[in-house]
Length: 112
Image (cartoon, rainbow, N blue to C red; front, side, top):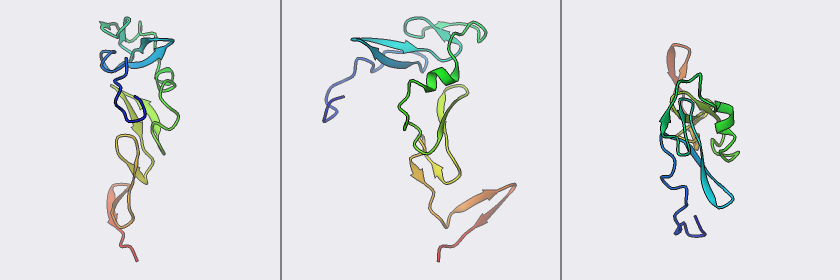
């Protein structure tokens, strides 16, 4: 945190099992992935007991977290990128002239 990223957030390393930390007033609070519960997401629960949904967890991320993609969750929260983007947060545009999958075949386009 801070203008030069020199201040460590209270959220740093606070939540367990990939929980999402946010500051609620002055205290860190965790939103747990399905299958986890407890103040720091340290308690394993069955998915039917899990109080949190994917949409709810994705709502705690900044709107531009996935850039051109969208937030999804399977075993963890991740970004699902559209065809022209790649990267953990869909931050990299795939340049033309690269191998592009089309159905079950691949084609190579050459820039002009």
